[in-house]
Length: 477
Image: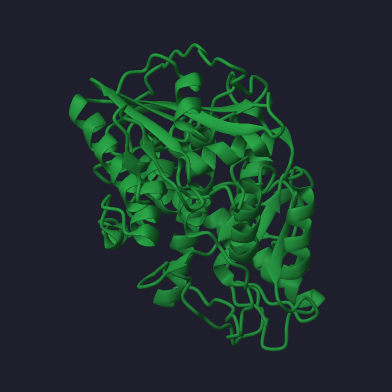
């Protein structure tokens, strides 16, 4: 997805916060060799393929696979084939063809991810830098591309690429590869999604950060929901499951937890969203959501079909300040409720801002929900448009932004404004007589004007107070 630099792949992501560990697949072990099912002897004709049977393996039969010394070719074939059969049985979708699975070292994955990203000085990255800076997640000293690359490079366990129809497992031991049960199942769901719904279709791509995360809510939610069903069968002993050896994992890197919390939202709220669809209409309701994905993270956080409120905007920049008309939607991004929550949570954790309780992220009420993205300062979101600005008139290009946010009620807007001002306070901002706040030091040292009018809050940012007035003149505090 665009926000992560993984626009063309769908990944299994590990997120573990101190004191708030994400659930993992229950360990299991296959001890018995493969044997024909007593009621299915002789069923080996691919032309008569049925749900729950793939490449000679039934979903409920044991296989002779031992990962203690890595997977050889025959073990990999059996492991993947039975995994496909189990995905078919749970998800009630038939694979059209076998799914190739290969392994890549984490170092090679990091290098490929960094090499595939747009140059750090590209127009997109300069534009996107302002988006993540507005969220107080990636400051001027880091840059969005570096923060995203470092985070995904250390957290991705495996991914499926629709462009070549292949699963790649990220491992520290490519010479003796092992594959986590749940990771394989998760990526196989993406493969069957692609074969049946075409994940390269335009409906799965968005021009905004919130749109990407919303679409991933059903894509990753579907895969995570099936993964959870599978893991529960392993834990209960209903199915024999290939044990994954305990290994020292060198994911390393220096992940930005603000980025990680943002991109993990589809994996957390997506399964709850999909479970609700399934309870109301079975797998066909989930299939319908893949045909017509959600459009905002508000929909996946709160399991609602409420549509965002349209926002119109006219550029009023003066003295050389202009938007990026070729980026996003007419120069703007929409970060949405999930990214706003990540902003408030990250700043509470890293700078002590009085925004949300850091521990509240663990306050969940569904067995399918890993973390809680519902909080007062971001709840009540109706829409937002964030317009990065630039000014190349001087020796160096300066940057700023106008962030227009709409809320369901005046009270919701007030809560957002107050929490945002608390972030500024945590960065030692001082307020001038004209109402502009100035942060003198640190990665977010800039000038800010924050104005609430009814159910709208507008934030204007620039290097200096004079720049703020030139970017959005006439905006009274």
